Amino acid sequence: MTSRRETEVIVFLARGNEAIGINKFSSSYNIEEEYNIAERNLMKEKHQIEKEKQLSLNQDTIRSKIFICPAKEDAQKVFLAGTFNNWALMPMTRLKSCFHAILRLKPGEYQYKFVVDGKWLEDPEAKSVQNVFGTANSIVSVD
Image 1 (tube, rainbow, N blue to C red):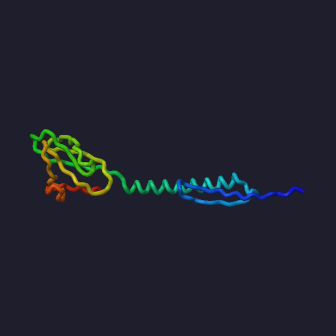
Image 2: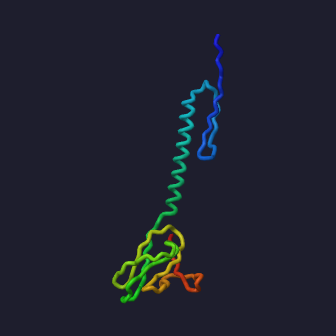
Image 3: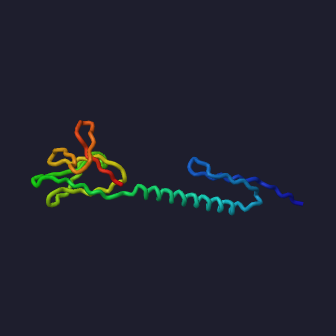
């Protein structure tokens, strides 16, 4: 008579350093089937995480914002700078009676200024806040 030897198998499922499940069963179970079940559960969880990421991205949707600088006709070079681009000078495009720039920004509040022929100016059409230099920065809110 042959004796059947039961072997206990422990399957440890992990994602990174986080344990997500431990399955314990004897060798009489189909290990491949248990693995497939665990893999399907993991795939469901990954799918749920992706859905949550997408929802988060939708809440932080990037919006287009138009900045208009009513510079005088004799203005040669007009730039836009602000917290949205680490105060780097970004050239604005001339229209007939003004300069404009279109930026794609995440929702939030940003400070900015126009630089017209080397002179830093606030936007006369926007709210402003005092900056660390004792002058004012314009404020734009992106919803």
